[in-house]
Length: 317
Ligand SMILES: O=C(O)c1cccc(C(=O)CC[C@H]2O[C@@H](n3cnc4c(=O)[nH]cnc43)[C@H](O)[C@@H]2O)c1
Image 1 (tube, rainbow, N blue to C red):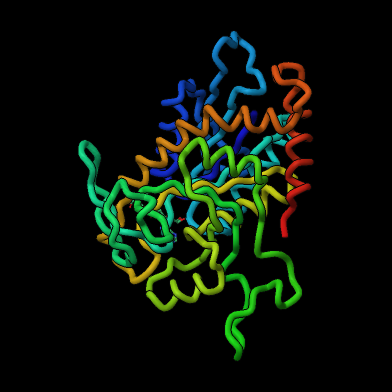
Image 2: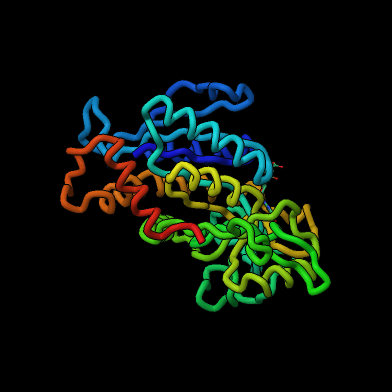
């Protein structure tokens, strides 16, 4: 499986690269992205156990990119990478938007023995202790993994006398991309991640009022970040399925930068990609051609077509 993983900043890219390396991948050379000299792709390859020199469909061949902050930068870089790969005859089977993000309803998390404290979220709404996930109120914990079952542009629209109107209310485009359900399930199971909508915003939420407004408009939201929708727009234009994977660095709510737990979130991102590197290629291969469980008879293009078909079935809305 060929995957393009798009992060915003180098610290996120490096956390992803570490995770895939931890899974056993060897790292190729860092390559410039032709036509986009500002971007360097880290190339990693993870052969399946027993594979010799040839990669099988259950192996992972990944490029990891730090594209910049925000939906425009991420869409531009993702589009460039997809165009280049297509022109090279090596299209991607899957695109993943990855990084840290703000969590809705972040509950205080107590430190447990031997692990770094994740501190408390400034807008935490719950009082249950760490390690008691079932007792927590709805919401995500700091350093939790979030897997988007919908990638939603939350501030793409217009202010009207009646409040915010999404572009779709104005008769344009889309505000939502739906990752393939089987890949969302596989990613959540592999990482222990929470599933829900991940909102893409161009402005980090900084008040309780704004957080409440977003939650009211998007009751299924578990996190917000700044790139997912841009990555998804580019992937969809190329017919490639897309996932968004985030680890929670902070609460969505009143701005309190000192309370962000970036190190804990980056460590969690590394752990998530260690697990995903092992699990996702199999999930893509199994869904793409169930009649060939060995996954050895098809080339990357055939797998690409199967994955694209699966994505078209779920379709962007
Ligand atoms: O300062 C650092 O060391 C550092 C290391 C890694 C990442 C960062 C970032 O600031 C990443 C920005 C990135 O994070 C996403 N993000 C995180 N929290 C939120 C949020 O509450 N609302 C929206 N986006 C958030 C976002 O995708 C940014 O691109 C710093």
